[in-house]
Length: 169
Image 1 (cartoon, rainbow, N blue to C red):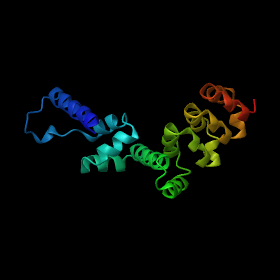
Image 2 (image 1 turned 90 degrees about the horizontal axis):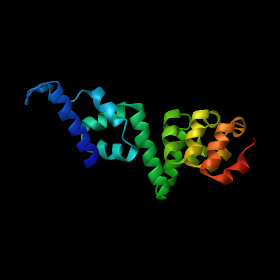
Image 3 (image 1 turned 45 degrees about the horizontal axis):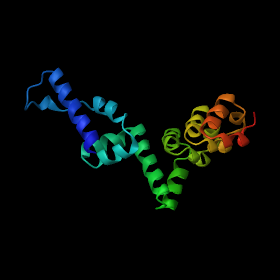
Image 4 (image 1 turned 30 degrees about the horizontal axis):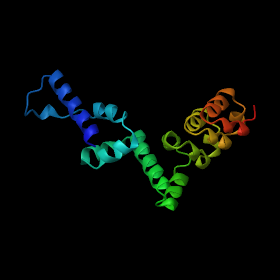
């Protein structure tokens, strides 16, 4: 949090200096669109910690779909890896199964989560690429069409050579 908060505060000071606001001015606040642009560079862990620091960040994160999905995906990933609340994690993933942004954020953390994605998402080129870049074994959950795709198979095999057994090429 301190690192993320430091950069946000630092950036806020630069903006204020650039716009020549006087100290004590009511316009000393950071515009929300600039905050969101900076928050998009943070990962789920950093966003989850930042969310607890102030109501403003919590509201911004909840209202922004990409940021909220990133925090939710991080929560599911950590809880599942720590073997805590496994059932709750499975329920969240099943509820968000067709949510493309959530699944994409989850796959960036753990490619093997492709098995929980809907068949429509398992047939999505971008989704499967995100999964196999992280975990070559995820190729086994891809649609037959993408198992035949040279680019997908190449990335999966580069990540894990044994993924070749799931390729149809």
